[in-house]
Length: 210
Image 1 (cartoon, rainbow, N blue to C red):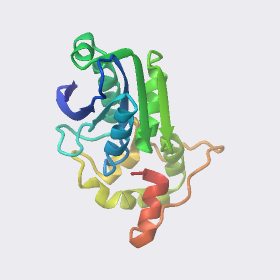
Image 2: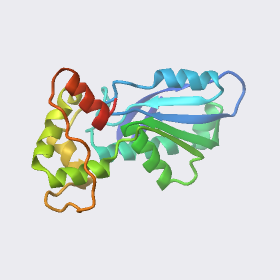
Image 3: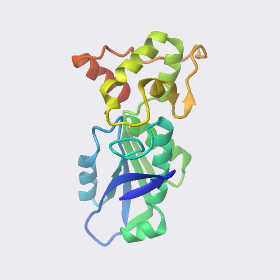
Image 4: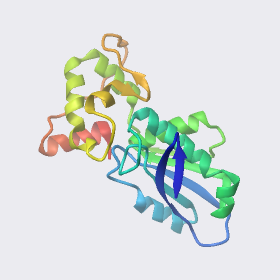
């Protein structure tokens, strides 16, 4: 499947169950940067009678455009709308009234934010959602933590285009992070570990997700 999002073509795979339908739809939203692409979940859902869609956001895994947290949210909203368009739904035996969003880490955050903005989405599942607000506030408070986040993105930037560790740290969901404007009541996450061996993997699991 392909979907237009602000002039860029998003690539996806639609898994269809047997039977005439119309089938409920689950859009699966992958984490950062997309190593785990949820095809296993898509097949489980298909066998259970759900149509399931896996797609890639702008700037990731060969898709055109540039990666940003804001673009992730925009792309998710566009795909959620596209699968319910009458022509698309009819062509693939989908029920536009029964759409669910599901995601892990960044995808869990994106699923919650997209569903909150669109009450017509019937259900949402979020697994270990990445808390951008908490991280943004913590980075305002601590310059050492700001540097550690840039280092921690590391090789995960390789599948992404048009971004950098600094850009990802300072742009959380489209809002710039301004050092020195932290709220005293904010609870910052644990400091990221150094980028090597197991410590690096613990950093990704805790702060970025897969």
